[in-house]
Image (cartoon, rainbow, N blue to C red):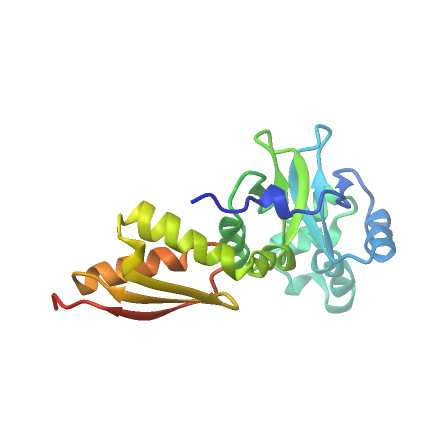
Length: 210
């Protein structure tokens, strides 16, 4: 099963800054472009970090609270005057040929809202957001059902499609039929759940062998 790659859903017009960008330039970029973060690039366009609103706010907070309250790394950001000194590094990135599911897992585990997309050399190619990742759930039900039957039921498990009824409605797949054992049913349902665009799987399988 070949799912959608990050390259297919990413935004290619990305606002980024160089590592020597000044603090004022970064603030102006955030305000004029109405974004909350951007990648930081070195001279070869490699992504070396990310600057967010939170990174920049450290300076304002430092002036209000005093440096004694800061962790050393936070204090360094508060004192920074260029992107290389303020950014969060290393950047959490995703490869352009990675499956969308990998990008979603990264966003969740690292608690980020967007990921710079890079090529094999680490150079910036685009950016992918949570909203971009969620577009896979717009996949038509007929495509979801066809993949569940052809690629999973027949291709992966070698089952006779005539012995099963598989439907998809609003991304919810219902599988009805008979398999030998409960373990077979669980494996089949798990595989269907990983079909791109599936929101949930309803188990209507029976296993007489039990």
